[in-house]
Length: 81
Image 1 (cartoon, rainbow, N blue to C red):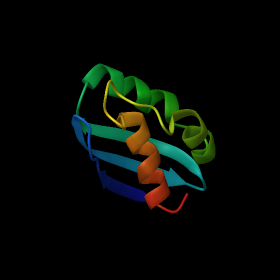
Image 2 (cartoon, helix red, strand yellow):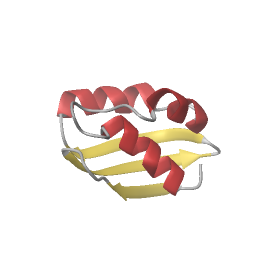
Image 3 (cartoon, rainbow, N blue to C red):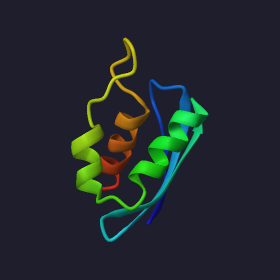
Image 4 (cartoon, rainbow, N blue to C red):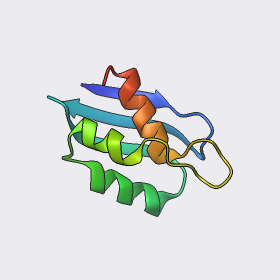
């Protein structure tokens, strides 16, 4: 299922993701730190959703209460995972 999530509290503005049978097939961030976000996207592609959430949920960026990886988890929860 393709999905676009509008992020909150991060430099990136949106996350476009595709999940099939509980596995992340594609992740693309709009805006933010391009190199880091490409790296995150490549690392999580092919992973089970529950593994991504276990590893990335709660990650903070500086003094912010969230981060781009944490926002990915929020998007996955919004999708019902």
